[in-house]
Image 1 (cartoon, rainbow, N blue to C red):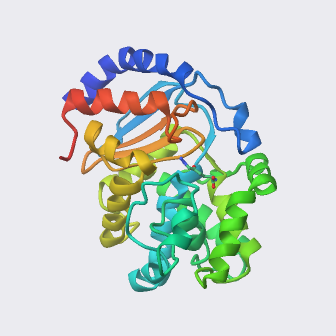
Image 2 (image 1 turned 60 degrees about the vertical axis):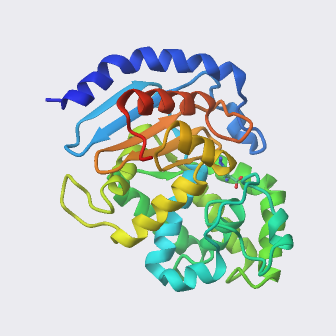
Length: 313
Ligand code: DON
């Protein structure tokens, strides 16, 4: 049986989703990764799972999409588990940038020339170089296994069309990675590091997978359904803090005011968000606003958060 708030969500969600969907036509699907331009601009779906494993799915929740920047939360956690805090934050900062997610402006402007945080592209590329493994494939397979464990879905895999499409067109990320190598930030061969990065961005999921991963973060690394500790609490604390300050890029401040929950978006239109101690939420809406976040998705999360008073602030 659903808990009272879940029951209320179930009742209201179809209405709110339809209302948020109207915003889809005001945004654009990402096209700088050519394969992403095929995403359905009108789609909007959401999956919410609670601590008892009860869930609600609405709209296009079954749509497959690639994790893109949502994966950066989990590569950060894996790099922390592999290397510890000190080594990771020797190469990546802890501050929001106020710039676009793919900007390399501050790398040259602000010394010591390390990326400002692990969730912007430059920071996530640096993090990719810290994943343990003998070569790019082993590193990528370790990331994939970790995502399979957290999502409780052993069939998660890379979308190789999106992976190839990004790798073939990533001139900006490539230039950033070579710049980072020159600054002594990247370990290993640049093309191998980029391969790990493109692969984790291309992991194909549905809203239910994202919601399940989010549920583990909502419980500070513990799977509430099995009691297994999958991530040390401290590393979840770090990840949640970055999600709050940088997870929606240079719209993180506005999102904190309007929604007030730790979240991470991706250019395929996915958003992972958590209601701490209570829910994991996965959402997809490929039509993006000017900051690269799902335009209808942000609107829907705003309705839910305001209606149920979920803001942490
Ligand atoms: O590197 C990129 O540009 C993409 N693979 C990921 C960027 C992304 O998802 C930014 N999100 N809003």
